[in-house]
Image (cartoon, rainbow, N blue to C red; front, side):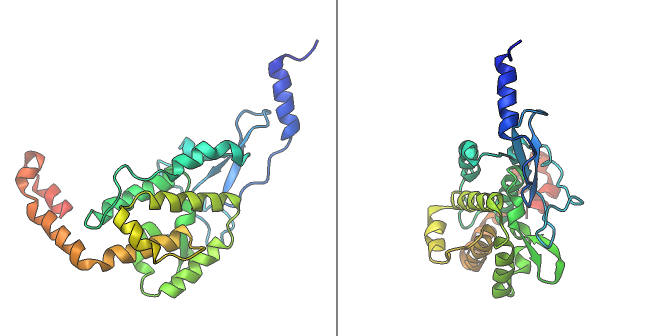
Length: 241
């Protein structure tokens, strides 16, 4: 009996990719359906300090099951996915906005899309640990040259998946800030800057604009009253302040 079209298709797939591909440094390949020959890499997570793989002892809740963390074996099939990962936040960040909210929104996008790994850098105080620059950037600002060396150390170990993730993260960040910030940042960036490097430069720019930033913060605090909150929730108002 001759093969049916489905059987023939499956056989062709197995012939094209008969064995599991070599895993990315920061991920693992999984077969969509056993025996189909269709492989997708699951990416994202905290890296080990020597960039040899993902630290499986530190899995972030809520991101493990995200289908957006998967990448097909053939990069040409991932063009639409890459475009989606590059899309910025619905409301671009501008100076005077809540920096904490911006950090949370950026980190969520990176984690859900499997881009967060490239946002880690070795802890300058303990080389056996890594820190995520999105939230831990204050720990690196004291010695920026040291930070740049640490960021480059990981960047130079990127494989093709890491490089694509870093490119998407950089484009996403650029699409998530105001036109005014984009103009300012153009003069601060260097060829070869990774997402981690660009993030630290952006944070320095935002925080160094202290006069404008703190005036905006004072205005937000001044305009908050118990009447602005459901049930005149003083505790919630205090948390926001």
